[in-house]
Length: 487
Ligand SMILES: [Zn+2]
Image 1 (cartoon, rainbow, N blue to C red):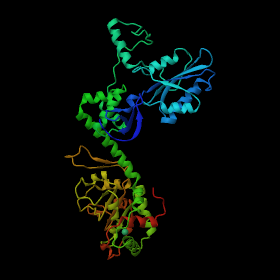
Image 2 (image 1 turned 90 degrees about the vertical axis):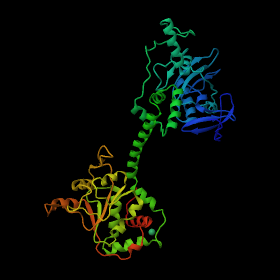
Image 3 (image 1 turned 180 degrees about the vertical axis):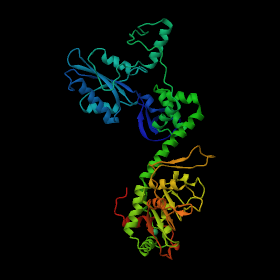
Image 4 (image 1 turned 45 degrees about the vertical axis):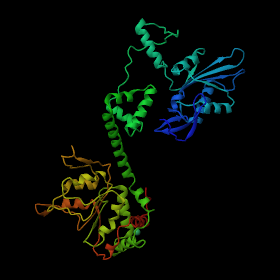
């Protein structure tokens, strides 16, 4: 990280040397001119020992009052960063009191900000950090050595864990000398240590969850996060990466992110059909002459006695609610009557599943689409069908449908869930009809018929071919005649 040169905020190390702080993947680095860059947090403690000494009776009130002032001073500087604390008070030798407080932070932070806030409130608090590696254990012991009634915050551990380095060396000593209640520096070992501390090993799915939790997108991001955690005493991710190797790790990162993304896209595409339309309103008209598409669409609707407010409301309603009985649209009529012309802009606005090829797998590609637009849709017994009749009925009424996929590429069918509300627009000579043994099956045909809302176009409009689909005109027309709120 030498010579990053990124100018950002200014920071200081504990000796007061000035450097630049810059952020990369949620980590702060501090960079000193001509030297290496360091993880900024590494230089700052996560534990502080605070002392407030007063010759006279303290102005802060109870131990709890003092603790609350300290917590809010950290909050004013950094937000909710205090993990837990413990506070005690002891009488001064002559007059007044000493307050002692051990504070454990959620991350490594400097104390200047909070100290200033406290000073402004009239409290000259002395901040010190425990000896290197000693952590909260030492601060806690110091605070509680005199005052047996020291108070602890919510979330304070019942038993404060000893620092790792000390635990490790204690264990080593025990092994060499046999069990002893005392360790080398004379401090009494308060709690018997567990016989064996086996660190938890992540399995692959736990690892994947951590990937998503930390927002890791690639191998480099993983390296930074795993190393950061290892230094903070949590080596789980690091161990997994070391044991499994880069290939497995990269695959897991890619897979976890891809799965999370599919959900995001599904939610987004459902939520945003009308929001997308709303955005289209702000685009510029692309017609050869301004507003041409809109005028021709109006004429087409008038010519065929289709009320504009009814048609526009039906389109918007289908986009809003999605596939369901009586809501999918079918524009019926002979060719050249403007049916396709009216709906073509959909193809430019949304990812459209268009008229399917006549193979049994074509419908499975609705998976990645936002709208189904079956232009000039033919669907009867004589033709090969792109989708079985009953599946089509289910697709139209909003039910779950299993759409076939070629086994050469996929292990299973694509399941179109109820939560996927992809709307169906269609045009054609007639709504599909169903024959059984050469005879029209009225029940089945009626079921297909009542899944659509049908508009009839019978009067040919001669001039529409020269006007290309214009998304701005399309959205403007809908907005002019639909009175609902688009969201
Ligand atoms: Zn236009």
